[in-house]
Length: 244
Image (cartoon, rainbow, N blue to C red; front, side, top):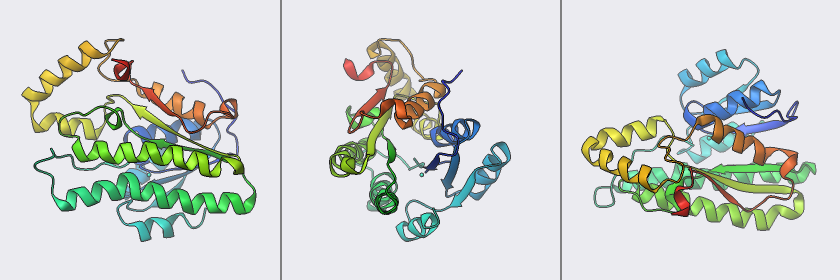
């Protein structure tokens, strides 16, 4: 059961809202009375999400297309990227991963923050990062770089816009049951079996998959007024993996 915060009438823009962590965050915010703009590149995912959460405002946009994304959020997305090992990644994969995971975060945030400042409205921005931003993990080479960049962007934004009462934090989940994790496991099941065992041995709570509810509740906590002095932080929800 999640903690109840007063989000009634509060506006949120959630990218990568069609599935995984983004979808779970949208669902909980909707259930707690927030006004949620849900952005996804998949219209079918948005349609099914709107059936579950009829009061959301769906926004169709592909985060790898910056112009389309900025146009989509004018009235007011973590997204799946193909993973490849360092020696195998193509220029196209490299550019897509940085476009979705970093470039979109920079310019969508910039677009929204300018409007918040002009309106004199404070708020909270939460970037969904990853524990791979701080630990090298096989198959996640360039993906890890995008998330490390996102963590530093978080700190830089917090420093730059804190005077406008806008907080910026990032959340670094451990392993979560998402399409991305399923994709990686299927690339090399035997190798992943070894990595899973090493991961469990290194995790103090001996937990392989972090509960989605923990990720959602941590996000809501950072978004709430109860954390008005928490900014520029990278909060890990990983069972303690990064401490070892």
